[in-house]
Image (cartoon, rainbow, N blue to C red; front, side, top):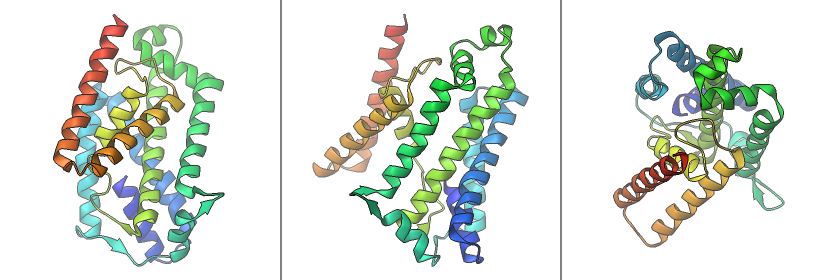
Length: 240
């Protein structure tokens, strides 16, 4: 997320059209980083959580290097204003997120690729013996994930008016909590896109409530961690 946003900002400062820079920084860079994760998972056979934990640190380090650990700003106002605008009272980032959610919903519910991904999540061996190309689908999933993270980095850069080298730090906790509270099984093969969206809204509402109550950030993290443990435990009980 941070690396995609930083690349987008650097490209704009180099004189590239803002929306072309967003396409390169968000889609291409995000997809490429996701592909690296997918290839590493396929090549090493290690658990994806371990791979992404390691590459997260690597990508964060690269972001700090190319930014010299400083925020990058001073790019096109058109880019910032576009994402700051609203359409019939709905902020552009919200519309943008809903479009992405609709695309993912269509992919997972109306295409063979989506059905194969669910089968892979349910049982990798069964999927393999059913004729599904396991490594290809793992790669595709990570590319999609990378593109989504890259687009999030672009939107974050536009909303802040600057590319932050530490953007998105700690967001993985909220992403996991949103997915699990939205009904996605931690053990794979179960979950719906719009349920995850609802899970994200619930997490956002809880965060806003804690902020209104002036609860310190440290305690908010405790609450998020507790919610994740409780949701996974409940999922485990239901799956039994």
